[in-house]
Image 1 (cartoon, rainbow, N blue to C red):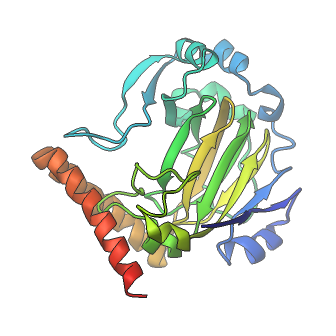
Image 2 (spheres, helix red, strand yellow; image 1 turned 30 degrees about the vertical axis):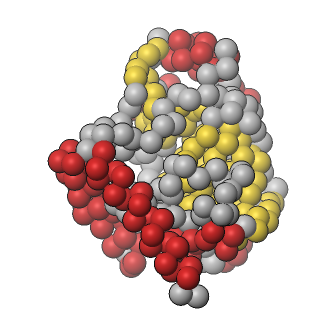
Length: 287
């Protein structure tokens, strides 16, 4: 596995972003894109607690879904203030996932902007992700094939990325949008998962105020080095192959996965994990 560094710049014009990164589908970190956002000064645990501390939030664990539990089903709910108290005590398993700011915490909407960077951002869906020190997010790609601006605040967050072409070597679990949960991407077991040696990717540690552009279909694995908050702004595909992929993922693959999980439970999960290993290793042998 070869890991390089994500391209980084302090600022970028709309024209340069579209030409050098969007058109080529290359990730980039833009350090000063949020420099005029109130969030850059305000967003902290204490600030969130003062505004929405009593808000009940859904929390998701870092374990693979078992039996008939649907993927991305919430594990529990609790007041944000209570959750933050757990994070301060070292909680790293529970994370906030896809928290819709406009719907759940509209008081935060004045703290950020939708940057004019050439992407047609969907302004109804700014979503927040929160994790504690040591929390990990399984290697996955986003189901909607969106262009994503991941705007990070708080402690550092390490992101490892692989292009869509890496799918053949990443042990993609059928009818899911993730790699095998058992793979440790920081300490890969090449004897058990030999195709991982073929992977070539990029990595970056996001700091407070950084914005990471993730192109459509790129795989990403995340480690929270400290308690952090990331807001994702999305530009959905409007045509071409990415729109077809999004529709296929949302309407077909996700539906089949949900139905089969309810019908077969853990047998379905085990079957897909076996297939991920068999298919990936067979492709490797044929090269």
